[in-house]
Length: 412
Image (cartoon, rainbow, N blue to C red; front, side, top):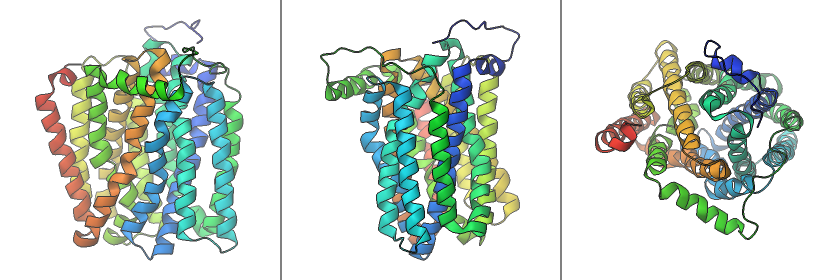
């Protein structure tokens, strides 16, 4: 890790963090990776709706096919991140995504695409993401000192959130111009470029030192116990599960909600998701700019409960004028929550275990589209709006209960 940079008290943490050359290349690579992922997610959702006649349950299953491997294989990705060169793992996974997305483009272009193709390729894309994300998160601690870790995490998250602003809008309009097959081809090219940008990073060329006697299985077990046996890390991780299960349900079901509530087309869906990304970008930049937050636990719980309340109200929107401001604020509070949660997890973990700790976090994050399946089934009965409102109210209630009964997390 390059520790030669001087941290000035008067200088913005954003500027100080960007002085690290490796961080700049990592940020570029993250931007490209998340841009490809967001464009691909919208395009996959739109194609799935066309193939399933706007069925919200089948849409949720397509999105879940991407998430399931992140839940199953993220622990393996975390163990690999602490055993193998993190940079190499990121480059490998990006290259794999490029190949598989190109295959989707060819199937779609030739008119041979079917729903089961989306499900299988979704599983493979998710597997690559399970390898990618633990290394991408853990490599930050190889690049910047611990006192800049919160700002680096937030700035790196801002690359993802920036793509959530422009990615859906790009996807929505590109689908109209070059159809879904052309969009998948562009996504494949972007993945290639992100692999090349990550090859410019010097950090992560060598693995973190671990016992030569250990096995992958023992490394995974050690990482799980490392989280479970420490009350602070365990509470932070438990708090992550609540919004993953009940706060992100809207993300997978948003295409179905937009067509039901607003009669939106692909460009309208892109605008709504652009608003969500704008809010998330704002939230991550706020955290990146702040030098210190003394009561991270209270801030974490406040952000999550507000997120739940806003989601419950947003789901009942019946116009763009109401939906877009609400979705912007949902983006802000969800981004603040995720940045703080990741910071608390990494700062409470030892460097040689951060890959595995992040993989446990990724495993929970992988449940996000899976959680949308029961809400997708409920949407068939009650409508997507009511289903998502219930999701938001459950998030609000569970967060308040966690706040009341968990003084350890509340007082962090």
